[in-house]
Every structure is written in structure tokens, then in C-alpha cells.
Amino acid sequence: MRTSPALRAAALAATATVLLPLAACSDGDGDGSSTPTGASTASPSSTPEDLASQQLAWSPCPPPNPAQGGGESPSPLPGGVVWECSFMDVPLDYAEPDGRTIELALVRAKAKDRKRRIGSLVFNFGGPGASGVATLPAFGTEYDKLRTRYDLVSFDPRGVGRSEGVQCADDAQLDAFYQEDSTPDDAAEEKQFVQGQQDFIADCEKNSGSELPFVGTTNAARDMDLMRAVLGDDQLHYFGISYGTELGGVYAHLFPDKVGRAVFDAVVDPTKDAEQSSLGQAQGFQLALDNFTKDCAERDDCALPGATPQEVEQGIADLLGELEEEPIDGLGDRALTQTLATTGIASALYSQETWPLLEQGLDEAGGGNGGLLLALADSLNGRSEDGSYDNSNAANISINCADSEQRFSLEQTKAALPAFRKASPLFGDYLGWGLMSCTGWPVAGAWKTPDVSAPGSAPILVIGNTGDPATPYAGAKAMVEQLGKGVGVELTYKGEGHGAYNSKDACVQRTVDGYLLNGTVPKSGTVCG
Image (cartoon, rainbow, N blue to C red):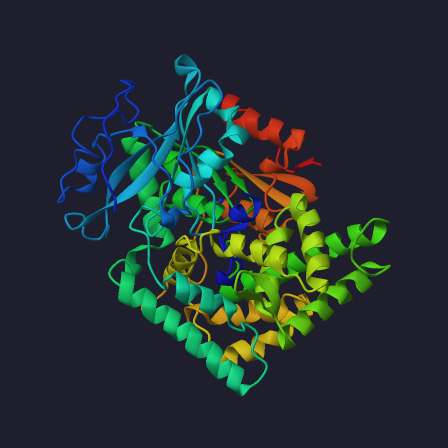
């Protein structure tokens, strides 16, 4: 998903979680097999043509590093298949192909049926800023059927995780940053808010200034085409989720003749600029909140006060108003503020499966215990229990600001707030003030909206979810139209949550599996759910 920095890549975390060359491990399949000389055979001055023939050194994956979210080494898949990791060299700047190279971290699990293997299926899980190297193993069993004919592959895009991860504020600074009021109500609070944004951007420039011009989506798409060649595939078979659909669309525009079987799930609307996208998210999260409060009001056992959806939502709004005046105890010495509570609510709305946690968290916060809502906020903010943060927020802002050319002044932001409040009484201010996240960014943005037109591309299956809060349903239709006639194939899922395939809806999974595994293209306009 291309979330605003206020609602970033950690939709994945809400439901779940020194670059060193790895030892060689050759499988002899011609699919990026390794040599015993480190991460790759490319030289620091290699051209893209040279880099396309580099040999990768695969070995069992180490534990995720702090920038990827930390944790344990990935567990083997059914049958004992071990996740393997490697690094791939890419140009820092494709305009200077003989210049500096950087390393991208990759992960894979080999296909079960090697004789019927189609190739590699490359995943991007969104954000931007989500670590594919950490995320794919965490969700690997949910894609295991696709592993019958594909090597499952993902990567940390440039600026993310182990791929020259962007660094901004440190852990203590981030704790303070997230405690700040993100919805100022008067001139003094506005001054403090703007200063906080400027300080954060200054830290990004200080710690990662040389990488910031090169972390945008166009370069990530070029990296994927180089990856396709290095993995030994004539075409890129691809599964993009959320922001991964925008990345996939840009790839299809740049390399339409290289698109293989591709699926876009939880689709970003490529026709909307930064302000329009944030406004759409305000509407989407309000829809999800309305569905949550309706479910609560209709159940006799709902713990929240209110006999109607409107009364339940008013109770939530009242709680947030009280937290603005006086935060409550959270976790350790950290309090639950209004901003963190709003983040926690948003986090739980990404999936219907986490609605019970939202209900419990709101009920406990009403009684003065903000621990659960703060934990939900931490998951969206990329904070581990030990107090360390991954780099997904820094990467999210860096990639968003490298892409979007829009920069909003304080006056422009305040002028936009009424529209945001109309779209969502609860999330409007929260998302509206987020428009200033790129104000003062040291790198100019690349576009107002991305070009995803892809004449000549193979069919791309585009899935829209009617209840998706982060990437509203209308984005799927817009993506189909922008990809062009005969390219986009629309599939609708009538359900809740961010994305459709992982909803476990049998119709969606049957349709996606049929296309990826057998090449069966469904009729555009097919409806599931």
C-alpha cells in the first residue's frame, strides 16, 4: 500500500513482525545459482549488463537485523525447505551505470516441483518500506501452494532493511516523535508540530543524505528488472500488495515486454496525487471504522458503550478527546496519547481479524489502561518490545518524498483540513496534518502521479477489496484503466481488511492460483465474496 507516512507500511506488522556476504550454496538450476566468492561476482564498477550476469551466493537466512524488525531466523517451510538469503549488486544511480553500486538483500524458497517450475515469483508487500526479506518467510505458508511451480522470492527495496536502509532518528528520538501531538489545535502546537517535522527531516538528511535521491519507485522498478535477469527469468512473475501494486505498475510501464504473470492486490490508485490519496485513505479508514462500530452495536457481547454504530463511534471520539487533555498509562514509562491511540485504532482496522483486539483495547483504555492500544500503535510504527524501531518509517517517508513532487505549506495544509474532517471525523485531522511530511525534504519529487500505462504487457490480475481501509476499492478500477486496454483484468472481493488473497476467501485464492500456476486468465469483472 502506498500509505501516507501517518499510516505506513506496518499494516503488515499489525497482522504479524553491517551487510555481510553469505556463504555459497549452489543448486545448479541456472536460477541465480551461486559461486563461492561472496555475495556476487560483480565488480564495484560493473555496468547493468555486467550486473545482469552476476552470480548470487545463497545460504540459510540469518535472523532479521534491527532495521528489518529483528527476531529469529525464519522457520523452515513444510517439508523442511530452508529459506535462503543473498545479496545482489545494483547501481546506486542508473544514470551513472559505471558508478557506485549498492547491495539489495534477497530471500527465496525453492519450488517444490522442479520439473514443472515456471520461474521465480517476486513479492513486494508494500509500504513503501516493508522488508520483503522479513515478511515473506513470516507469511510463507500462506503462499505455499504457489511454491509448487515457483521459487518464492522477495527483497528489501533500496533504502529498506538490509538494502542500504535509510536512517533518520534513533530509538529514543522516535519514542519522543511519536508522543508528539500530530493534530495541533493552536499556534503554539502548530509551531511545535512543524519543528518536529523539520527535526526529523534534518536527521534523515544528516544520516542518509547521499542515498535519499535514489530510493524512489522508478529505481526500485529498475532493480526488479535486473533481479529478473539475475534470477534467470525471461519475464518477471510478480505478486504486488498495496504499494507493491504501484511499484508493479511502474515496472509494467517501463518494461511491458518483460511482464509475465502478475497479480496486484490491495491496489493503489495511480491517478491520485498525494493529497487525493490521503483523502481517500481518510474515507477508507472511516468506512472500516463504520463497519467495526456497526458490528459492535449489533452484538450483545460488545464491550463498548452504545446501542447504535453512531453511539459506539461517539464513545471512541470522546475517548480520544479525553486523551488529548490527559494521556493515560501505556507500557512501561510511555503514556498513551491521543495520537498514539489513533494510530493503534488504525492499526487494528487493517484486518477484520484484529477487530477483537481493537474492541478490547478501547474498552481497557476507557478504564485507564492504554497498554493494548499502545501495543497496536507500536506495531504500526515498527517498534519492537525491546524499544528498537525498524527502518520502515524512515524508508516510507524517504520513498514517498522521492516520488511525490507535492510539498504543502502550513497554510495549504490548514486549508485542506475541512475536506479531511468531512471525509472522516475521527481520522481527518490525523491524515490531513500528514500532508506536511515532505515539506522541506532535501530531494525534489519525481511526479505528481506515476505513469503505469503498459501497452503490450501480458495480462495483469488486479484485485480490489470493497472494505479495504488503506487502498480504497476504487483504486483497482483506476489501475485497470491506466494499465490500458487488454492489460488490466479486474477481480472484486466483497470483504473487509487490507488485501484479498490473505483473507483466505476460496474464490479469490482459486482465481489467483489458477492464473499464476496455470495461466488461466479470469473474465474481467469477476466478483468474489
